[in-house]
Image 1 (spheres, rainbow, N blue to C red):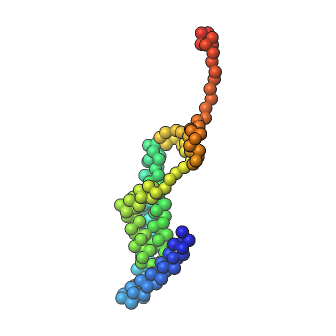
Image 2 (tube, one colour):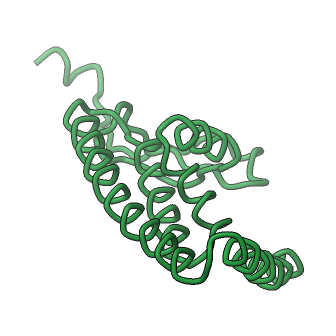
Image 3 (cartoon, helix red, strand yellow):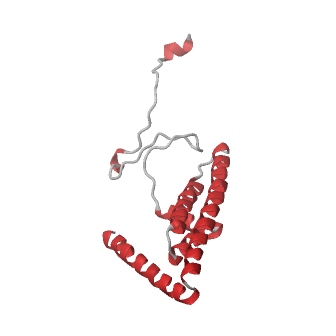
Length: 159
């Protein structure tokens, strides 16, 4: 994982500098700077409006008693889009705008949700209540449920 991150930290700025030189040579210095600033402001306002809309959807799903996992992940993706749009550069702006669009963002969120495995105990009123907790490698022990019981004899039932 470290070599990939290191490669990105080197490759992305090099590509962005190359794009700045190409675009600046084509349209000039000040229009290039203006274009970078405009994409940052427009991107920030779009991230804000999309974020508010996603937050409202999360609240509606919670009120309906559903787990808004995809909407929460889309909110995280919106934050990533905001960072990409505020980072100066044309490549990062294109990536941020792509993530900002609802269709690609929803597909990316579904893809990421398919790759994530959630383990642990969850009981917050979303659907089923379970006290079951899996431990990898403990399959021989079976399932454990917490509870209380009271032993009653046959003569207690007759009273």
